[in-house]
Length: 284
Ligand SMILES: NCCCN[C@H]1CC[C@H](NCCCN)CC1
Image (cartoon, rainbow, N blue to C red; front, side, top):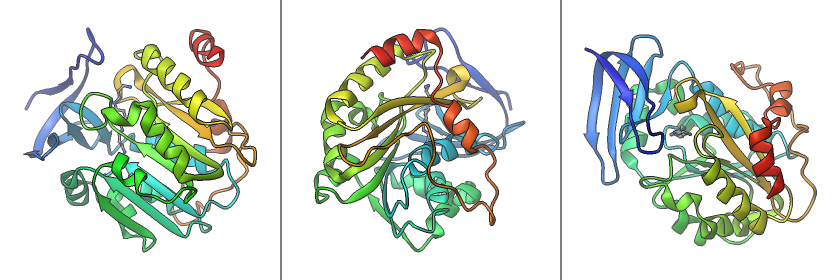
C-alpha cells in the first residue's frame, strides 16, 4: 500500500523510497520506533526511527564489508566484540573465521534482536553460533567495564549519530575502544557517507588520529538502499604490530556459505577515494 520514503534532517532535500507490499511489524522500544515491511523489490526491510537499517537484497554488502575489512587485515583474530549490530548480520560474518574463539555483542535495544530473529532469519542466523554471547545494554558502559587489551577486533555496527548511537561517534567512545583492544588490534566503525557527511567524517578522522596510534584509514562501499547509495567505514589500529588494511592477510572459509559481495580485490579498492574526500581525510 504505497511507498516508504526515508526523509531525515541528516540528508536534507533528498529521500530514497521503496515500494511497500505489506507492513509486517510496527513497535516502539525503550529507544526507538521499529518497523519491518515487505518491499516490492528489496525483500524485507528493517527501519529504525524512519531510517533504513537493512534490506534482505543488499545487506550482504554492508555486513560483509564492515566485518571482513578489519578481520581480513589481521592474522588469526581470536576475540571479537560487536557494538550494535543487533540484527545479527555481522555475527554471521564473524562466525566464518575458524580462528575466532569468542564473539561478544553489545546491543542496546532487545527489540531489534527479537524482530530480526522473527523476520530476518538469514541475518539473525549469526546468533546460532556457540561462540556468541549477547549483552543487552549500552556499548559505552560495556567497553568501560572490559579489561584493557581484551579484544583483537571491535566492530561498531551503529545506526546514525541522531538517536541512541550518538555517543558512538564521539572521542571518549573511541578512547574506550582503543583501551579494550590489544596492541595492533583493529576497530571498524560505520562512518557515514562522503556525499552527505564530509563534516562528520572530518571530525571522526581527527578524533581517530588522536586516539589510534597505529594506522587510520577510511574505506567505503555501495549499499543502494542507504542514502546517497554509499556508506563508509573507519579502519583503525592501536600501537603495536603494524596493520596494513589495504592488503588483506587472512582468507575466508566461504565453502559452507558463499560471499555475495566481499572479495580481496574489492577489499583493496574500498580504500580508493575521490579527490574531494582524500583532500579532507588524508590531510587530517
Ligand atoms: N547491521 C546493519 C546496521 C545498519 N547500520 C546503519 C544503519 C543506518 C544507515 N544510515 C545511512 C545514513 C547515510 N550515511 C547507516 C548504516
